[in-house]
Image 1: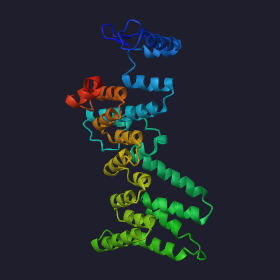
Image 2 (image 1 turned 30 degrees about the horizontal axis):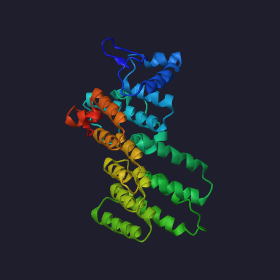
Image 3 (image 1 turned 90 degrees about the horizontal axis):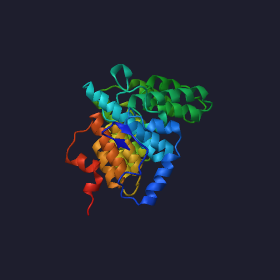
Image 4 (image 1 turned 135 degrees about the vertical axis):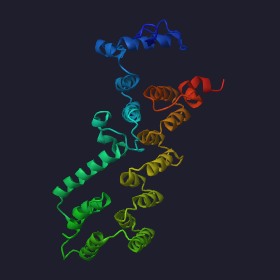
Length: 322
């Protein structure tokens, strides 16, 4: 509990006027007293900021959902805040993390997958494909590597793998034609129109993966993502795109009643820097405490301006009906 007049924190809540009954306050105080001296000293350190406190408490309580939320929130709040201070525009979904430019050290851990920054995520996926390529031992494995390389824009290496197909393989002719196509693609209007027509026809006839590859070859990744979303392949679309317009649609999909993965959708919005929307969603899910703490952190980091909306979200009890 913060004591503003002294700038210190106390672990004694017995004199605090809480609405809970005395026995509840007693149980809370008992739990606080059970904390080790090391933890108590950290929590009472006035230099510990709010995000650090939220992260520490989520670990102490073993709350996985809270821990994941505050880990992602802390990273992107710092990222967008420092970019704003430097007047550096940060694309949605790609937090600025270069320490040379003043961003927070390191990246969001890759265990967060598509929530990571675009450049870091794509670099990791490329390293992953290269590792798989070294260990490949069958045609199916080689084909998978070639497909991934095409989606990642590594056309030269993909062609090399396609040309490795043995003449005895039933896919030899198709792989050879694909290798020729990849090496001869131009940016001219007629060729792009033809390839796009072929791609859409393939998708319409059940060849979704092949059609998506063709669209990526002519720099139509956004169209490819929309097709993937249309056919319900939302995770593959997010993997391919890492672009704000696609990820926003993914978040909306996660919020839909049919899917109802709102917690995951909130994490996606965090990675896009849609902080006010995050607060509103938390409030609508009746996670009032988390919403209030998050809005307060946003205001402190300067990524949000105080207004009527933020006042309602940061003081939830005032917005509830009597």
